[in-house]
Length: 322
Image (tube, rainbow, N blue to C red; front, side):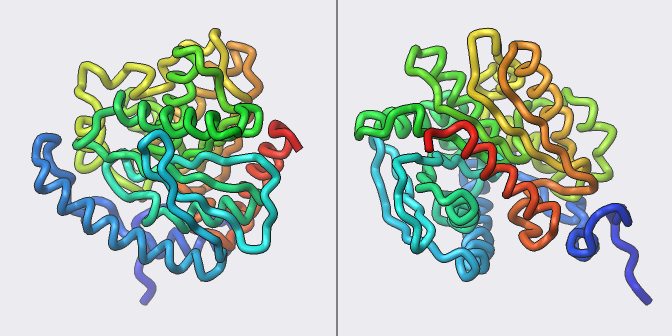
């Protein structure tokens, strides 16, 4: 007898995506995240997540081999990631990894950086920023800005720099761009936001309507605690914590926002796109039927994922100097 999957598996998605959806585990069965002030519990969770992340990255690195070197950019550690056999063309993709702001590292997310390097042909610089709760939202984006500033000082002009973030890293990427703009530092040439966490409050409509459809995490058991570790409740609508609340009339780079229709974060994608569009910013909202959080790398062989990665590469080619 076949076990009934806890999440709806639509017939409108690819066979590869259907198999993946059937394999997912109910997030209600996962332990709750710690209280924001319980640093010891967070360190324990981070160690477990790091081990799991490195295992997933190992599988991706077997398929997407890369040359990796360690960097220090403005005092911030980073990994320089290049697909084997590719020649540098002067363009750089700055990557801010996901993990709800509280998990993983540039090393445990190396697999995703490797996929990006292969798909785009670009040099990828993955920022190893400090995690919450050890680091709050304002300092976290400071670290990303410091690393990008160092790249510029080393001779890479902004028109050759793109920024790419997935999940919470997507929110961090957007916040860092806003901070650079507000400080008069200029902005990267293009932004790619994959399943971005753009509002760390549960304000969006789909936080409720898709609550039981999203097989990722639960707000009440997981993201509520991660959000509080990242930013005190009074600060959670600050644009550097939740960039969907930013003022885009002052400018923002051309932006590609990708996500799936099973994500509770969907309202954030739509609201961010509308804010950019109203401000006259070149933006593309690229949504995928039945897809889950970070599907591009989690289901790498699904046609939906292949298409999304191709669109990302095309968007970068369109907006970066050749």
